[in-house]
Image (cartoon, rainbow, N blue to C red):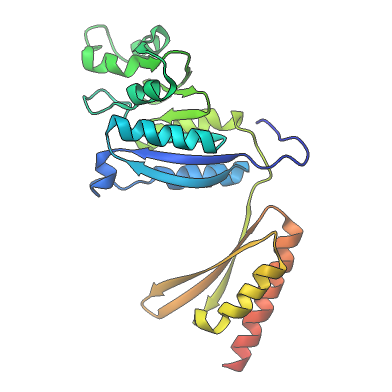
Length: 251
């Protein structure tokens, strides 16, 4: 894993989810959660997530906008064998490079398919933008690819995870984000919101959020603190616990 220089800002990232099936609600996007968790543990800041349909112009526009803004762009979906799998062509258009059948990708596909099985539809999965590096796929062999700062992965969760595990060690690693969750129980958010804001301002290196959870026993609130600095996180958590203890005693 590539370690950052001392004092270097954490690498930033965006996820671009591609597919009509996500926007229609037919398929649930579980890939973003996996990528977000992986990046947090790696020390890369995920700053934005977008979802676009299987429309070339929209994919191109989103890719170009995101790659100009963030260190890494992870895309999921649209690299299969069907007519609506157009991600490779869209990425080629975004980078201004041709897309063609890549002998390296074809060799990977031959690890799984015989020549008779390697029909024109399956050969579509060997179409790669010129200059891209392949991302090996240990499950179905059809590769993803990495071009510039854009990392193109499959939409099938198990395959995407395999690809993420391949590229992850090569990302510019930083200090992981530490997380502490404190149960606020049935204390209403309105009862601690202003004092929680004051704690957040006093601990600038810690991100603090309040999240209600609706259960059969009513609303149960959680306060979640995040920071790369373990000491700062501990101090902020201590202040939050003191706040909740004070409020609980007054009930």
